[in-house]
Image (cartoon, rainbow, N blue to C red; front, side, top):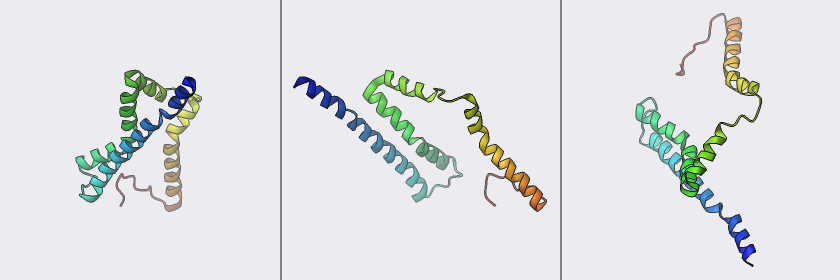
Length: 126
């Protein structure tokens, strides 16, 4: 009986932290994004950029906060060490880092060949 109770408790233990993670992540994201959208705060302004960036990283921050609360500093260390693990060959990391640049340069060259001028390289749409 005692062994069954401890197994049952061990299996249901992660449910509350998981619920807390989703609640915190979505709440933080929605507050940040809806504030920018509904106030409205221009995304070109420093406050708008900060809120969007905070909203983007809300799941990561929620994971850190819930892990710190439930498992302490040791759990946070384990979580952060998992981010730095190299699970595939280095060539795939190089591919992931260079893929977008290669595609954009290829499209720019094709645009130059087809149209005769280089495309406009700007962060803002024209």
